[in-house]
Each structure stands twice: as C-alpha cells, then as structure tokens.
Image 1 (cartoon, one colour):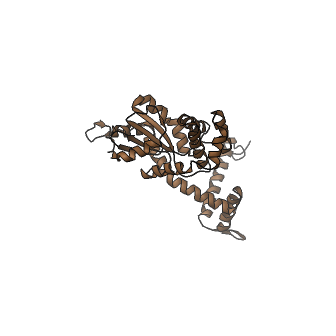
Image 2 (cartoon, rainbow, N blue to C red; image 1 turned 120 degrees about the vertical axis):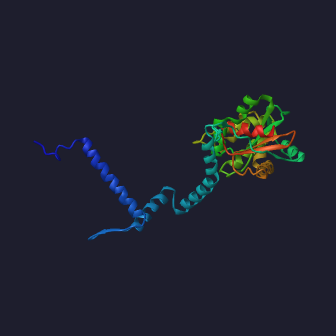
Amino acid sequence: MFSKSESCNTSCLNSILLGVLIVLNAFGLYLLMGNSFSVPSISVDPVGIKKAMLELEYQKVGGKANYDIIAQATAIQMKEQIPQMEQYIKTKGGDTTTTSPGGTTTTPAPAAASTMSAADVTAILATATLEGNKKADIVAIEYSDMECPFCIRQFHDTKLQPTLATQYGDKVAFAFKNNRGVNHAGTEAKALAALCAKQVGGDSAYISYYKAIMDGTTQSSMFAVAKLPEIAKNLKLDVKKWQTCVDTKSTLAQFDAESSEARKYNLNGTPGTLLLNVKTGKYATVEGAYPISEFTQKIASIQ
C-alpha cells in the first residue's frame, strides 16, 4: 500500500513544480527591486545580479555602446509613434458613433477645416505626381517614408490610393510625396531613387518605381537598397542616366522640399496625409496610419 505522498500522480507533480517556479520568480523580482536576502553563510547581492543581467544584454548587441544607441533610438521612435498607435487602436473598428443622454445615436461632425492660399495650393500641386483624375477637386497627398512600418501598413492594409479611387472615382486624386520622418537607414536612398526615376522617365516611371519598392516591402522585410537599380532596369529606364542622378544626389533638394512641405502642415511623422480641396484651398490632415473612415470624415469636412 502506497502512502498519499508516494502515490502523487503527474498532475500533482506539475502543480508542485508550478508552485516552485512562482516562488522563484517572486524571489527574483524581490531581489531586482533592490532588496537583499541572506541566511547564515549565504548572501545575495541584488546589484550584482542587475549588473550580470545587463552584461548579458550588452553581449547580445555587441557591447554597451551599441546597447545605449539602440535604447536611445528606440525611445525616440516610440515617443513619436505611440500616439499614432493609440489613435489607430481607438479608430480600428471605424466606430465613430456616440450616444446622447436621451439614447440617440449620432455620428460626430467632422472637425472644421483650415484654408491655405491659392499660391500654396499651386506650390503643392506643382511637384505632385497625381494618380487618377488630374482635374479632381480633392487631392490626397501622402507624405511617406518607404522604410516606415506605418507607411508600409497604410500601403498594404489600408491601400489608401486604390481605396480612395474605388470609393470616390474621379472626384479624388492621389499623390505620393516623400518625407524624412524618422529617417531610417534607407529612407533617403529610396526617395532619391524614386525621384530620379521621375527625372529620367516622367510621372509614370515615378509611380511605378515607388510602388515597386512598397510592393517588395513588408513589416518584417525591407526592400534592399542594393536592389534599387534592378527596378530602374525592369522599368526600362535609361539606367546610366538614372544612376548618375542617384550618385550626384540630383534630387536631394526636391526630397528636402517635400519634407519641409510636410512639416509646414504639421505632418512631422510618417505617414502624414494632406487632404486638399484645390478649388477652395480648404484642407485637413491625417497624421498616421488609420482606417479609411478617418480619411472619409476629413474629406467630408473640405467638400
């Protein structure tokens, strides 16, 4: 006859092990919070444990200097992008209705639009490569970074340009402009390459070029800068002229001008979209990657 303790089954053993792990984790947290623990002839140094854990993190990235750089860059990027993420979560379902005290469900009116001068409208359109009806009253201008995760999401998930074309037809045109934004490793190279495609091959080449980069980019895999010449070749551009344009940074001034244009309308992050009524000068902005409902509300405010 087995005693109760001797007949403990697998479930019992698992419960015991789980309890031990919980105790060990709690003990570890106790130490990391700066507390100490000692028994006769045994002492634990919480500061030493912290240092050892940090050393492990340093080793993973090639040293403390790299760790500090990564931590600083991450903090800067998250400070800018967390508000966009929070707002995206709030609007993910496209639910913009509210319930009044009387129980009536209403949709809030779009925020009031701003108005720019006719000269500013002309300046924006002068460098915009329009997709769709070039005489449309409304133009959606996306200031983007081809290495920005949120820009990639807007391109692949929201599908802003084709979705607007489907929903509004000839009433809304679209333009893709460049913005340094967070300025990722390949941001400038890709912007200059696309603008050089426009310089060598015109508007259609520019549109095909930037879309080829975005089509070849995912959240987990960036299109390699080294493959940029392949796009020029596939589009049958004069590759020699295109390469000279890239090497001499002939389009850098245009890239900087587009980035400054975005900042002028407080579109400091990416993506940032300017929704403009070219007839009246009324405009509204969408700062970040949002569901299409955010864009339709803003368009309604400038019509």
